[in-house]
Image (cartoon, rainbow, N blue to C red; front, side):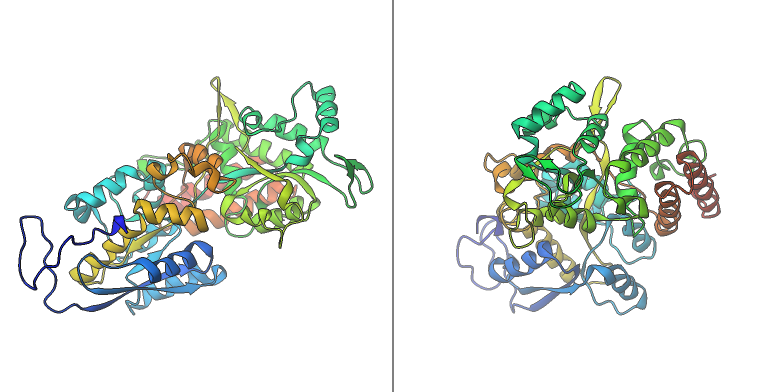
Length: 474
């Protein structure tokens, strides 16, 4: 394989051939790189592909061994391992929001000195999309300190029923009602804002037995859906897009200790964004107003043929194209998510998904070297292209620029085009307290227990107090 930097000639043990030759070890060692990872397609591919193709350029016999952990218990298992002192893992797949906890706890390794000494790693970082490096690798967020590399990038895109959106009758009816074009093609969706998204939601709401496209709907049918779930970060993962797109901000950890929460988190722009987020839920299935419309519920309802369009993570909603799990597999298309007009531009700021993988701090120099060789292999062009063809999204701009990339998966074009609009929320160890309280307040707004302003005021006050006590706000 061209990316594995094979030796071009047989080298006698201990001999040095030319200035750039690699000296093979006198006795090749058996080294296992143990990695903790969630159990799903992108990491299963990594294991299978490593088994088939990986050979360390050092001459050692290196095996990548992934410990597959169910998503539901993944954080708890990783946290228990990191804090127990067992020193089990050399590599860890980590949500970006967790990295501050384990960096400040001394478990995740800063990589700058290795990158500075390695031209290959430097070239990889130049090729990785900068939004991925910022979200997955830096701590504090957007600093020059690098801790991780992309394992599986993910973004939210629009999945829609092309049989409905491209239907002549539905097109004519939508035009007559809203004086707008019902988006059919990818290019049509490029100009869709959240107001039009609301029009789509209202337009496609149909009772069971009503005409829909060229037929009728057997069940109540809904126009739109996006995340509105109290579990983990489901609501935050969508709501913060509305905050950012309306010109609001979250607490800026990159500017601590000077960044404030009160007056920023609950600014008029942020409140306006959350109000819009909550308002559009009236066009979604009833589960939206219960705080239980998470990423899997959205995908299931769409795959069952009960929603016209959804905004969801591409890694999760890939199943919408699988005839085994989706009744609309042959009727689904992908486009950009809606945006908000801000200062004359349709902006699509959104929350970065996916995960990095990081090195742990307790390994020998030799194991660190071998772990970084695994990183280089994973982020080589050949591996990334094969990953894209199977179960994942490439992190490399050079791979995304290949003529064939857009056609490999239905979401690739949209995924590639929204990367520049991705931000991340907090990486600090207080992440879970910040997130849990925010989720509670968003849930109150979603379920009608509070207004958007009351929710944002409560979030800002809580964050101000928590982060001041933690010494992150002066």
